[in-house]
Length: 42
Image 1 (cartoon, rainbow, N blue to C red):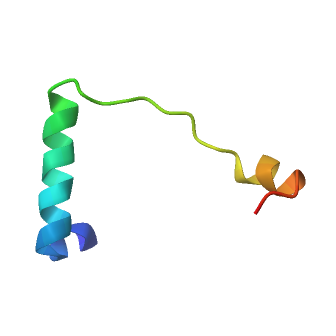
Image 2 (cartoon, rainbow, N blue to C red):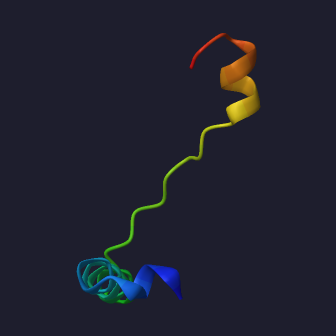
Image 3 (cartoon, rainbow, N blue to C red):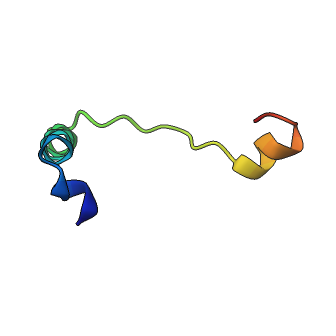
């Protein structure tokens, strides 16, 4: 996996997964790139 090839990225990814497993995840809304484009926002 590409993200695991860099030690700093691998550490951050593993820490993030541990936080998620501990119930510390935050659900977020994803933006709709098409809607942003149609409104003229870059």
